[in-house]
Length: 233
Image (tube, rainbow, N blue to C red):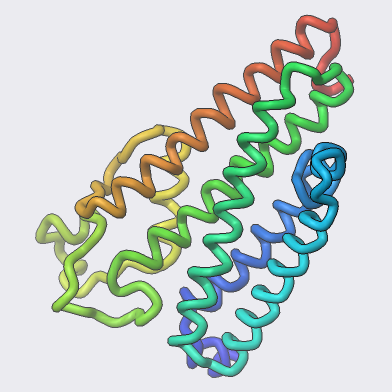
C-alpha cells in the first residue's frame, strides 16, 4: 500500500480524497440545487432535468478521476481534477447565490438547517480553493522542483534564507493552510499572491467567505433571534 500511494504522489492522493469529501459535503447541503428544498424552485422553472443531470455529470467525472488515479495517469488526472474542481466551484457559487435569494422567506425551523448548510459551505470553500492554489502553483501535481516556472505564491520559506529550508517545496497541506487563513482573514496572511490568477482566486474565495459567514449566517441568526428561537433548541 505504501508503494502504491508513493507511486501516485502523496499530494495527488490527498487531493483526490479531498475532492470526494467536497462532493459528499455539497450533496449534504439541504438547500442545494441538486437535492433538498431548492429542487422546488428548479421544478417550477420547468427545468426538472437539471438536478439529475448535474448529479450525473459530477458522479461520472469523479468516477473517471478516481479511475485515472488508480491507473496512475497523471496528465489526464491533472485535467480531470481541474474539471471536477471547476464544477464543485460552480456548485458552491450557485448554492451561495440561491441561498441569498430565498433567505428572506425562511422560517426559524428552516434557519436551523441553513446554519448547518453555512458550515458545510464554509468548509467546502476552504477545500475547493486549497485545490486551486495547489493546482496553479509550482510544483503542483509534479511534486518536483520546476525552476523554469514562476511562483504564484510567495511562501515565507521561499522569500527568505531560512536554515534547513533551502530545498523546501510546498505540498498540498501548505495550500490548505493558505485557503483556511484566507477564508477567515478575508485577505492574505503570511503568504502573498504574486500572479493575477492567484489574486483573482483569493478574491473569489474571500468574497464567498464574506457572503457566507457574515451575510447568510448573520441573517440566519437574526431570524432566529427575532422569532425567539435558539440554535440548540
